[in-house]
Image (cartoon, rainbow, N blue to C red; front, side, top):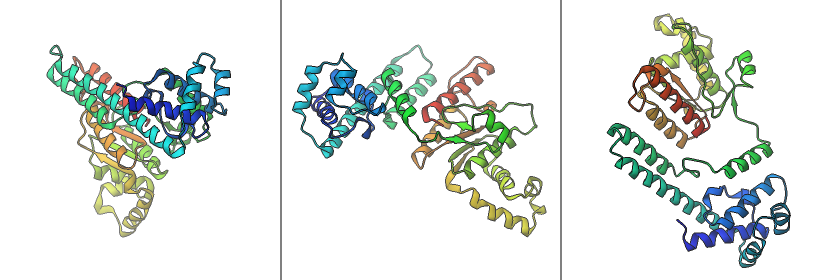
Length: 335
């Protein structure tokens, strides 16, 4: 879907970059936002030049990318006469058109899924809902990322001095094995026999993440929010879980310590979900939290109590579907 207005915006925007009125990396655009082949190739070249610390102008581009149509680009830059403010408007138009194009593609996929009579109705509803969720999010890359976008993203990441977001577990020997702690896009499983402290360990991780300023979603199907808060309070206050668990044993001094410790656990940094029962409902809770302040990490206690979104033939297959869905969620939200 390419309109004359969007094509003109793409040409004007590329011309503004090559004329030195703006930079390719200033507006958050991606290659998939461009529908004009020449503008897409030129934008890719501009991103690569800027990632290398070079000026994205005609001379540098022709020296570095001889395959680009030089005559067409010269004409494009001669036609372009936009300043920084107009470049912003053109970038917004390009982004808006690209999003509408991807939304249209997602709705077409949803319609195709709904017409597939060979699939069980429940599966069709789940798949359709996933497409509609993606359309509602208006993601910039749809359900895939162009290879050139991926390379550019890597080059920009490599040149970015911003420290990588790493969430320490609070256990130094474990953090050293994990390269500093828990990282975005990763899926970690705590496994052990029953009643040896898996939930307690995960609560320790969650408490430490919240204390360090990260935002956490805690999905608990085994314990309510009150019991989980009690575990966190024990971790930060120094009052034993035994005393917190048996309320009658708490002294006024214990209560004072607990109340004082909650400044380390601001309620704005975490949410509990005791209703989520499938990866899809976990994802919905995660998207809601991400949209209202951000999200860095999800804790799920525990996998075997989740149910797969789709019908499966065995419990082993079900757990496989659940872990795959959670891993994809980690990648999707970089959490």
